[in-house]
Length: 427
Image (cartoon, rainbow, N blue to C red; front, side, top):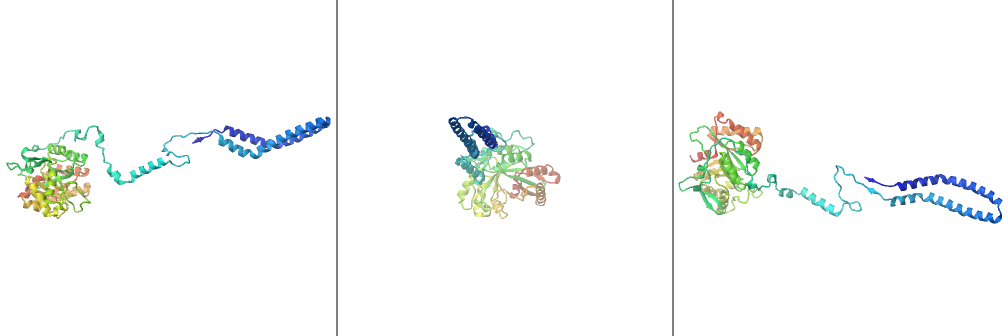
């Protein structure tokens, strides 16, 4: 908003109007003065008459000329006075955003245009958005992440105590980390670290395994805190603070698996990670990658396949991996991303404990669909004696599984750890 100080120009306008209004009257008055002057001249001598006429002529010429000049040049005089009139510009701040600084010609400056272009690129370039990590969990405190407790309070659910880990007789210390081995007295990790399960239990068994844990801290906490200890948990080998998650899970009575990244059908468009087992690698290269995954933690009973839709259909690449797992006293859960998987067949031939997925609970993550899938798992268990259901750590899945498990025995079934199902493969 601009406020101009223009009192001088307003006064001039009034003077011009008044001058134009009286100009005609001045002419009339001049005529009368001339008439009176003529009478006066008749009364004086010739010399005085000539001097008086000359004075009146000069005065009249100047007076009339000034009036005429003002009359015809008033507009231009007014414009010039306005141009030279000083003014003050006052900007009132409001809710509107502050406009960009402008150059003298009224256009944004080059510096402002450059800033706008950079901001536009940041907002529209998806790669820049993807490259910015979500640090919402890390900015809550100035403490390093390793110093923060994963759970703010102790678990209060009743559960069975699992065997302490690491058991010195079940660990081989190598450069990359601790590797599981069969102890000198024949003990194996899949039995020693398992959750106790009665051999006298005759009811049909259902094992529920939550996969993809450790990636989201909140989702992992929800599973550990809200599901029964008989449910098995599978963790990603790349998860942060993996050892802490394993300790908390086992303290809550959960058996633990580590996810083993394997080649998917559309690799490398889908890439499970830098230590993925590939059919294009040599046997020794795949074993080295396998050992790296196994060295990330201790206290687990075995591995679960992860994105393995291609490698599990390649017996020549898969068999050495299964053989290595057996030699280290581990079991395997085949999530069966591909129904043509050979994992179970190879494991059984090698007399290795193995289990395979029957049902995905939350391919459609709705309460109605999850309840229907749990009912299907019950039907399979009643017909065959056991069933394996795979779940992801979605809030709706955690809620439905927890509610379903509360009265499972009343429906003639029992919730079992995954090792209780793998045991069946050795019969």
